[in-house]
Image (cartoon, one colour):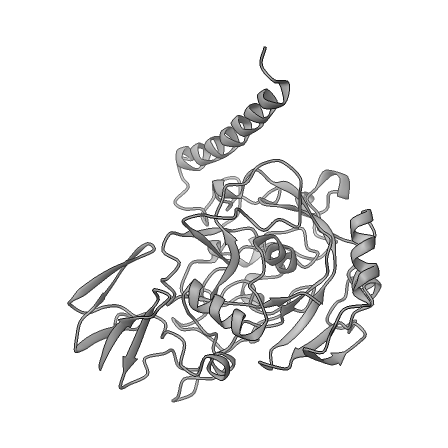
Length: 410
């Protein structure tokens, strides 16, 4: 006779597979759907239109966003919903905060408007806003909480790998960068510029990378901006010890700040997963887990985006074909900027498919072949700028579009 536990596990796995297959087939067979960011227009408004952008106001008429907690995937910040959470909060007061400068102990009500979020932050006993002494990076506290990770009910732009949605509990408070790490902060630690964005190759050596390839010619190679214009520079390409590509050139092809002639130090730093992980190792910081990233991005909002798209995100429709200095768009409910758009952001997990089982402090599998980036990108369409979107990267050493936002345990 078969072991009942084994049979149940196999059935759960089969149900998860069917979830993903069903949703993929639904999108594939929708006769008028052109992409995930263009759902059925006869039923749903065009997501590019102002009137269809997700509402974050609790008085919204969108019934998917106003379901009671028991019927929705609402983010529920809490420092005392589980015994483990109570233990973590009790130990928080003993945390060693010598690594940071306290900027604000008390939560700013103008930044964190939700009383439940403020109460959860205050309950930890930790300062809300700090600055890392080693890097100058400003960080905000994220309280413990529970949420349903994955596709939000009513999100017609979701990918199959956002299913099945599943309960996640984060029992530990953590600090997260208020902004994406900037070029200036990167240079301070790494003593070298991060990889220049929007690099396209000339003739010569072809290195497979993610969705395409970089072609690098020597002794010269070509860079193309987002409009296809060639920027020709002298230089060479080498692989670093960690396998990432290091470029040395006579002209800086990095994106330029709006209205300026020089590359802005406040642009997001872009680099491979291994280089970004090295930045963290050198500073005592870390990449957030995928669950930590999504929980912080949603900021208490039960919607794919935490605000009106153009107000919170740089994307293909409004960025003018270039990265923008960090902090130029409105923050979410926890005070974090640019979590949607501007630069993709690495997380610490290896990529894996979701399952239905509830999870506590998930960190992803111990090994894998692909990494995960989150948050969207300035030169991608609006459908990529969503809190639950997961982008699988098969070559983590390719990093000319991807930046980072750092985390730290108190």
